[in-house]
Image 1 (spheres, rainbow, N blue to C red):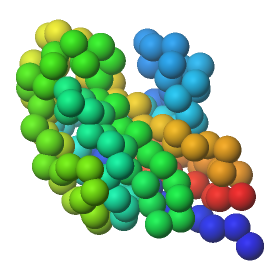
Image 2 (cartoon, rainbow, N blue to C red; image 1 turned 90 degrees about the vertical axis):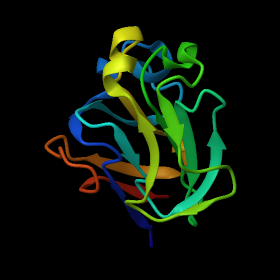
Image 3 (cartoon, rainbow, N blue to C red; image 1 turned 180 degrees about the vertical axis):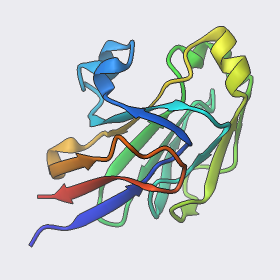
Length: 152
């Protein structure tokens, strides 16, 4: 029997296909399967219950691992690493346990958009353990279920 995991939308905004992300690591799915969000808010919430396994020094990307082994990367913005953390505030550190819907990151969306793109890919970095990814492109509000992942 396969295991299904619901992921909550980590940030309010418009859900789009990864192919709309202007970065080949995401749009060619080199980083993994998933979707992207064009944000309309400044707060990022954990899409799942899990453990923080990565917080980039520039605070623009956070990795989370679920109990089932699913690894999720939330990457706020494209070319946002060049901001070196300016405009970002992380509420978590590596090793923290988080619950779905818990606030994990703040970013100044207007500031980021002046310097880079704010589009936010969410990818499953270990997609090889995934059988099916079902994405609801109609989701718009943070903490709504927007993706269901079925593990092999």
